Length: 295
Length: 302
Image 1: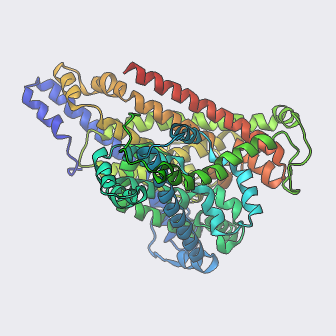
Image 2: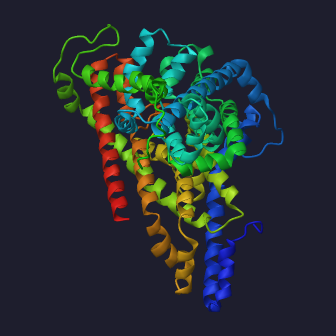
């Protein structure tokens, strides 16, 4: 608890000689605030901690005492059983492949479109922009039937492309890029153009290299979004070897019935990759949300 | 948008097509997967389209609309959806605001709060559902155990009681997604100038008064954004309900999106499901337009 310091400003305010009573009330308020926050944060961590604790308990113990926290005989049996029974390695691989494919396609196409809207001038540019803007208001889930029919007639059910393609037109990604490109100094682009670089080359060699914040924000969001998507892969994938992790995990339940150690082990295995991404890119993720407000 | 002058006088023929050409790949995807399906949904609502037969099927005029609007199940799922939206939006706005305002006071512990509140947000809904099905399980779940500590002798069946099921799912959703709003508020707080804070302190305002009269009012725009994004997201609820209760018990948690899923994909009644889709779309569109109107007005006032 001592590791948590108040904002320096709060302390320095003492420099303007405030009455001692106010400084006391300030300190009391900070203490109450910190206590409340820590209590809530711990409460927030309970489900995660419990899942982890349950997953390493022997199945027998979970049956006799389901709400216990600790075990004298920690075991990784539940994890082993999950790996043997399910198709977990497939699901991990499928989730990685579909998430990466979608992310790469989205980053390229959305940034190209945003570059065209931000830096080039052509007729109907405004109209195209307004039309894209309208797309933000179309909730994708509502369009699942026609999207499904289109992919079915194209023979793309149970394929990676079936999972990937409908997730590529991400209008918010275009806006993130456009907002970033709008802030690039005009002179930089003009100089490149004056040197004889074509638009495509200006985009690829001048603009994209300095747009890493926008690229990483979009990358993380698209990746996490595709990785976690449930409804869409549930519709287009029925083959257990083609399932993504979220869809596959729900089928674990049917395999095991109620054994909670296995369920918690699969929950932990489903959580690990994203918690790792989160731990690595915490700052970027938070900045990405803060800058764009996408959900 | 500021109008900038044309890049240079060297606009050759290739130049004129550069913009549209670079826009084209995205525009194609946009047309094929968003605009096309939207048009199809509007059209299919006027036909007896079935998943089992190809083509649109017989023209039905307004039959689907009449049927949907007269269907008690449609209204019930809409009511369930709105109930879920209320149950989640209120705490997800107010609690995340409170947490962010408090956390903003502490610099060095912030990574811990950010981790505790935000980490659940990146988890797949499948993980959340598995976890909370265990927490809410009868006899052996943590939630029943917890209320027993507080002296409740016969805790409710959290997911099995129609009166409690939606509340339980909403509580899990609040736990899962609050970090997103929390972070939006933390970002909004960065824009509150320190001087304003300090001036209020010098004027003798205590911490609580400063929060109420200075900080919260300055977060007005963030609050509008958070509220509307939350309402739109909640109206589209599907995953966690489908996995935790599949709409039960007795349909008490079945949301509109599940009605679309069930009638469209399970029963194969595409025309009917399209009509429901369009009506849900109109509800969401209405919320979005109100948002844009509010933002417009707020911007004019500034």
